[in-house]
Image 1 (tube, one colour):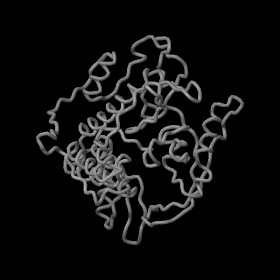
Image 2 (cartoon, one colour):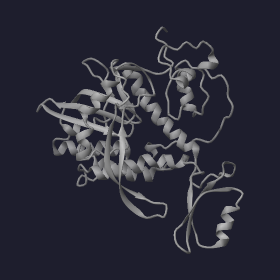
Image 3 (cartoon, helix red, strand yellow):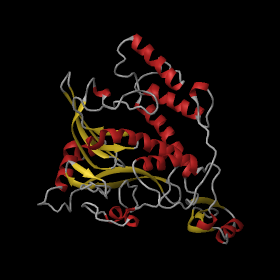
Length: 382
C-alpha cells in the first residue's frame, strides 16, 4: 500500500496514514483485500480475524521435507551447500571455548541439520558469509520475478530491427546506436503478452516468505511492546530480569546473538532507528567495558569518509530532531558524496561522482513519541 510493504490493522487508516486511534466502524473500511497462503489465514483466524470474501483459491499438492527419513526435498542440495558455507564462515559460537565444546557444536549441528561442518574451515570470514547469505536469500525472489522486465537486444540487421519494432507483443523503449553496424534496443513484453519464465513459481515464493513472516511473528507475539525494531529475520528488543528471552541456537529458524562477536554478554545500551534498514546503536561488553558503535543504512556504503558524516551520533540527532516541536525538520538530512562504477547506454563502464541523501523515513507506523509506535489502525480503547 502506498508503494510500501505495510503491516497495519485498518486499511483506511493505513491508506491515509492516520496518526490517531482508528475511528472506522464499517467493516468494509477496515478490511484488507490481498493474497495470502493458507498458513497465514489460519494464523489470522486464530487471532480473531474473519474472512469476508473469497475471490480466487489455488489448490495444489503439498509435500514436506522429512529430515528424519533423510529424504531429498526440492532444494535440499542447494540449501545445504550454501548453509554449510555460511555456518563455517560464521566462526565458532561464543560458547565454544574448548576442543570438547567445538566437537559438541559440530555434532549438534549435524544432528539438527544433517550437515557435516569441517572444523578446519570454521573461522570468521565476513566476505564468504555475506556471499552465502545472499545466495540463500535471493534464491526465493527469483521464483516471483516479474516477466515484464526490460531487456536489451543487440541488433545487427535491418530484418531483426523491423521484427522488433512491428512485434505485436513487445514494446520498444529505447534504441542506441553503438556503432555503424550495431544498435542496442531496449524493450519489454506488453502486459497482456507477458509469459511466465521457466523458473517462475509464485506458490513456492509466496509459501517460503510466508513461513519466514510467521516464524518472526512468533517472536514478536511473545516480546510484544518490548520490540524496538524488526526485519525479516531479526529482532532488537529491551531485556530485563525475569522477562521472556528468545531461545538461541545455530539451526535454521533459531535466533542467534549477533552481538556475541563483540564479546561475551555484550548488550545494546542505546538504539535509534530512522526507518527500515536504517539504524544505529551503542553496545557495551561488561567484562572489558569496551564500547562498540554500529550504524547500518541500506544503500549507503559507510566507508571512512562517509562515516565521518553518518554515524551513531549524527543518526541520533536526526531522529530526535524529528520530534522537536520547535523544529520543522525541513532540512533534517545528510548528503554524502562517493565514487560509483556505472554502465552507460552503450554498455561502457565509467567511474563517476555521485551523491546520496540520508534522512529518516518513518512512514510505516504511527509514532506516539520518540520511543513508542503503534501500527496504523490500532484502537487503544479496546
